[in-house]
Amino acid sequence: MTMTNTAPAATATTTSTLDLAGVSRWYGNVVAVNNVSMSLGPGVTGLLGPNGAGKTTLLHMMAGFLTPSRGQVTLDGRPTWRNPEVYRRLGLVSEREAVHSFLTAYEFVLATAKLHKLPDPQAAARRAIDLVEMADAQDRRIGTYSKGMRQRTRVAAALVHDPQVLLLDEPFNGMDPRQRLHMMELLHSLGDAGRTILFSSHILEEVEQVSGTVQVMVAGRLAASGDFRTIRRLMTNRPHVFAIRSTDDRALAVALMAESSVSGVELGREGLTVRAGDYGAFTRMLPKVALARGVRVQQLVPEDESLESVFSYLVEA
Amino acid sequence: MSTVSWITMRGLFGRRRFLLLLPLPILLVGLAVLSRALGVTPADWGPPVLVGLGLAVVLPVVALIVGTGVLGAEIDDGTVVHVLTTPLPRWQIVLPKLAVAAGATAVTVAVPLFAAGLLADSVRLGAALAVAASVGALAYTALFVAASLLTRRPVLLGLVYVLIWEGLLSNVVTGTRVLSIQHYVIALADRLAPTNLLSTTVSVSVAAVMTALIIIAATFLSIDRLRSFSVAGETS
Image (spheres, each protein chain N blue to C red):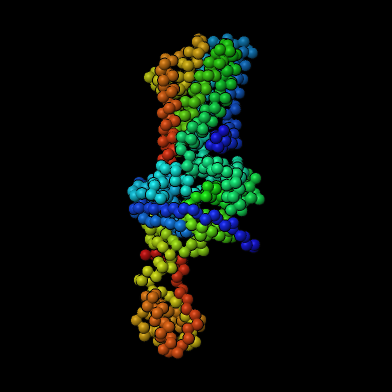
């Protein structure tokens, strides 16, 4: 597999903030989104949740394609609903794989640039197509593309006007590993350039690789928000699990068992597995205890700080 | 040509359903030519061919296929989102689409009606039918574009209007003719070229006012509905 260099995104001259204030959306008796408030600023944020959690409904409300049953969605203070002006600063890549199959990628992206009334639509279309690495296939009809190529074409169209905010619903669907990697690099580069990027996914690895900041939806509610490692540390009712290797595991195990912040120690061939109730207290105490016993700690790895464990704790809660 | 018109035309003429438009006009001209060749008197074949087929079937059916195709098809397959995620005021989306739909319908229907009118009576009748059908094309397509935004089943709604309201009720219940584009078109054509082949049931003034009202109201409704366009309820 060859690594590709993503063309760097231009730095955003202004930044935009997308705000949701007490947003709910229901269909008859079914509540799809329940009282969600969040504020999205520059950088990449992952919208995570199991299927049916309300991610797509939330994205559609953010993009102005659904009116909230209650609450308000605003982009830089202006509502997104019934306000086409927001699309000067907002781009959307919806989950539905709908593209005008009778156009070529270049025609499609150029048409989008013209609809945005950009001063130099040809240059904007070429730049957007280069950004998603579709230049080689840009003159073929979209109907002949693979799913991943169609997805990249849609991303190019959403980026053609260089929006400050980009919303993507399951953007990695149908992409092969190389395209996925490229898309991740592109999102990183856009986020680093000061754009507000929100992408939804139900695949933890995708979110973990692209973004540390997550908004976790569970059953229509916003279950957690922020950096997932920080979220994990705030879950004080769940003991933190650490893998430790040292010069004398047995002696360290005995010493740790005497500490109140430790709720369990398991001695194995690979070292110790320690469960601690308080992340901060444990990491401050460990060096002192090891030093007092003359044990040198060789490795300390938090074992359940992955997004997967954070997510499973949230879903179980 | 605006980008919206260009995409709409590419979508309309690039889809196979456009081929559905061709048989009806061909049938209309074919029947007129055949009747004329067989020496049937225009008084016998004119009303069923010009009105029964031309104005009651060809015009509304072509308008239905085209009118629901310019926006309804894009709503169906989701491609409308690409046009809607731009800062274009919604009237700049609706008006070009309506213009393309009305133009395509008018060309498809007016040409065979002109030929049939010419064969039945005179150039004047042919021209009157073509002009009246073009006005009718605008009214029908405005109505069907609006239907595309009011319901997920615009073709069904359109067929109910054409077949049940205009085809059945307006022949039985006279009052319903006041809300029938078909009868407006007949009245307008008869005013432009008075003939015994067309029997009018509504006055020209009612026809003109109602046609204008339908076009304006349906267009405003389409623009307003497009402003509030919601993506269908996916809850994943």
